[in-house]
Image (cartoon, rainbow, N blue to C red; front, side, top):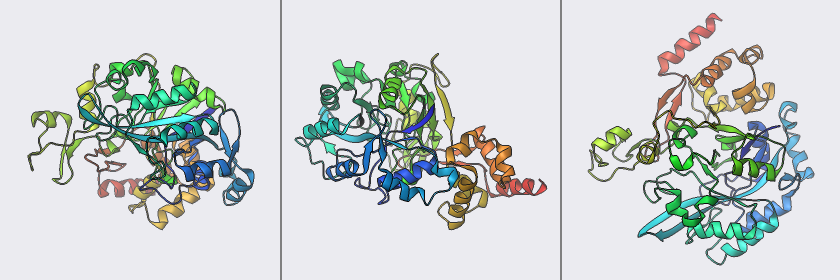
Amino acid sequence: MQLIVDLHLHSHFSRATSKSLTLEGLYKWGKIKGVNVIGTGDFTHPSWFSELRDKLEPAEPGLFRLKPTIAADIDKSLSESIKKQEIRFILTSEISNIYSKLGKVRKLHNLVIAPSFEDVSKINSYLERIGNLSADGRPILGLDSKELLKICLKINENILFIPAHIWTPWFAMFGSKSGFDSIKEAFDELSGEIVAVETGLSSDPWMNWRIKELQNIAIISNSDAHSPQKIGREATIFDCPFDYFQIISAIKNNDERLLGTIEFFPEEGKYHFDGHRICNVKLSADETKKLDRICPVCHHQLTVGVNFRVSELASFPVGFKPENHKKVEYIIPLPEIIAELKGVSVSTKSVSDTFIKVYNTLGNEFAILRNIPTKLISEAGFPELSLAVDLVRRNKVEIEPGYDGVYGKIRLFKDERARKNFGGQMSLL
């Protein structure tokens, strides 16, 4: 059974997140997107943890479902092609660890995944002695990441600890601003307990495979969604039944049950290239090296991005892949494809209306982007979309990398002229 799993996201109790990040919102958008197992996010927050206990019930081992009375009301608003998909929840939380180590302030975000409410209660009991868990869905704790890992291991060996978006400059294990140069440096004698890392939006498995330390551990991807519409923008694919312990075991062993990941094009991430947003300076790794990391406009230190940082720590060349490599699929979200075909903003009503029509006709977004033959998409009344989806599946896209907090742009067409030419080709069909 193939499962699409998104372990890292947030609730409406985290800062700068959508008010619709409720269990109901996650359930509905999980079905629309085609995500099978959704992380709850934010289980450390007392009010959110209370909501989780009130609205979820046990399903398969270590997984939960939305209570039937709540789910039924949501399903009424969904088409038959969407509502039939099963959704499960898994207890997860991101924790921000800020502390001093080896003479430097470290800022690491870590993902914790647990199999039961009882385990989460124990985690929260430890952490509430260290910091204010009510202040934010993603709590900020003055706790060494290694000590957080120790707490998890002490409570239950089936709790999984994963360094999050490991290349992000400001808050990550390998981040250029406050991270470390190795897992060993960050976790000392417990480095062997790090069995997986999360790519983050600005890197992909190909980039991570260049790092010697990451050769024998799992590379996973998640959305880090701050709104329900963003869940699944990155995700991990498994071949196993609904079962917490199978999912966790597949990650720990990095075996055949972990099929691969669904990825943002990493250039779209907002820290892929180097630069200064204020100075409107964007640079490749080679350009940054020539400038000795100094901005040519303001002459201050550049924000060094993920691509540079990977090259700095890499033991293998660009394009290297290990023998046991997993599948990597790149996507552009369906609303963004529709918006570009129409030549309008993704937030317009016409894009929303078309998106609803497409998934109500064909099924969930991942099925459309990944599986449904393009011929069937065309025959269903969406010929332009069928050709656009084919371009994305073949990675035939135009790329403008992100930098210093500015998202990159992934386009189907280089410019408006190319888009109109595409429309002209369609009229001939």
